[in-house]
Amino acid sequence: MQEQNFTAAQYAPRAADYVASAVHAGGADLDQIEALLAGRGIAMALDLGCGGGHVSYRAAPHVAQVVACDVTQAMLDEVAKTAAQRGLTNIETRCAAAEALPFAAASFDAVLCRFSAHHWQDFEAGLREARRVLKPGGLAVFVDTVAPASRLLDTHLQAMELLRDASHVRNYSVAEWVCALSRAGFAVQGASLRRLCMEFGTWTARTRTSPENAGAILQLQRAAPEPVRAHFAIGEDGSFDIEAAAFELN
Image (cartoon, rainbow, N blue to C red; front, side):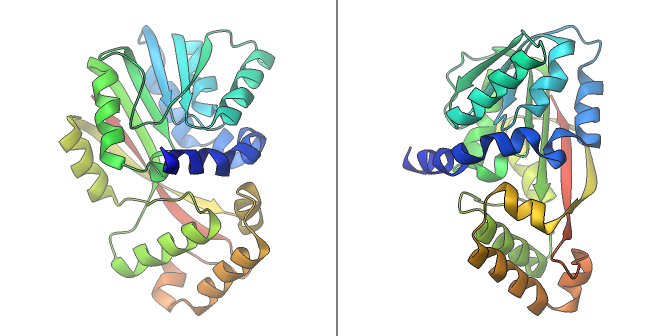
């Protein structure tokens, strides 16, 4: 609980930033989620670790009800306000951690989760909870930034992420994701990878990274060996590329 309270405290002052974030508000992965929902006649959908609510906004026109769930109440307040402004009356909010969802088993026809799992204190417990609340045969989609398989590249990424945001736990590799999803009882129907460009100033401003930590990240990038600089396409201003994976499950 203390760890979850820490994450909530980290993100409460940033809630409006995540609603406005261009990286979070758009992208081919959101288009993919919306296309998967369209025409399926879904009654109940869960947006797990909803953050700024962008999955909820896309899902709302295609389902009867969306529950936007997050551990940060300030995020949920922003989601409720934004949904009301957009006339999306079928979005409700619920404050809870992914590892302890306050929903009965088989409550949802779809469970959707985007850019949240790398903050979970217990990754596999969160996946088990997601599986528990999903109806048999239901749709699940998980999207998250992923770590490279290379230990060198993985270590560099985790160090940057932790310096940027103290609530970061871990970016998992695609292999770690697939194994954990299988153990949780999901069947992977498809997986796709996309590269995202992280503009350094926006990336650090969104999490309100201190100037000292932003400087440390830049030092880390400049001192990195060439294979690291090439893989992440590190620019002179500190901007870099990262991979995100989308997993389609049932």
